[in-house]
Length: 119
Image 1 (tube, one colour):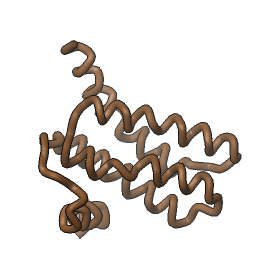
Image 2 (tube, rainbow, N blue to C red):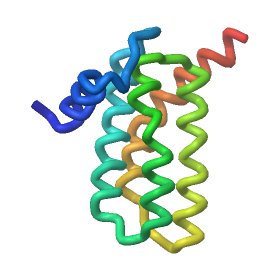
Image 3 (cartoon, rainbow, N blue to C red):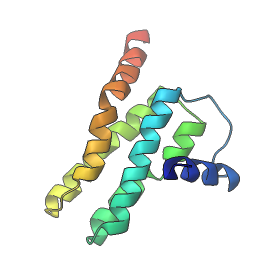
């Protein structure tokens, strides 16, 4: 089993994820990729401040998946700007995390766009 899905399953077993509105499968996979690559980044990060911001950045992803809303998705997506800013201030490369967000960005932006069109 893939590490991303083991993380997700562990969060469910530990009761960290409640049952709520279901996240669309393509968004769920994208968010699990972001979580996976951010955790790998944190594991190898040598800058404590950047690692803390990265952890803060993704710690709500399991809840977002289990209690999905487009509003929460938009918040998580915009949250990455804080990580980008801190990494820039620290002159620390976060390409692994940014690539994960960029790879999923089109799907997420389309999902957020649907919310704005429905308002």
